[in-house]
Length: 194
Image (tube, rainbow, N blue to C red; front, top):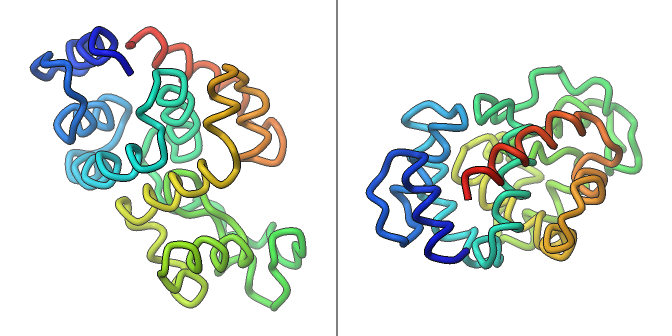
């Protein structure tokens, strides 16, 4: 993101417009998008590190697509765990749910709503954290944000965001186009902020 875009965002979220995106700006952004104060602070702490690591802050398209998708998936950062029980994922071999109870145990968590035993195993192994045996920790905002950034990177979503392709980004995250209109609404709002 360039300095002018960062200053515009900072003005909109109500922080000092110094052109440097950091924890304060990100915390204010998460709050403006619906997170509680405590959740916004924790998300910002992780975002300030991991969004840089995975190139999400490299340009405004990556940033707004990432934030729009997470805003939708987490219900405006109010939910770090899927509201539904997860029973709908029971027996879903495509998600790696091969044991009785896997649907509930590996339901969506974190701001990207990581779902399925296979995903918990994969991202746990890649990040060096035993998420498969401790799936509930993905619901911790800072852990969930780190997992979301890794998921974003591993699924080539920076490339799709660079093409400004909200449909393709949505399909990679959701497996379909559920909530596409809401995702587009969040994207348009975030675009107007940068």
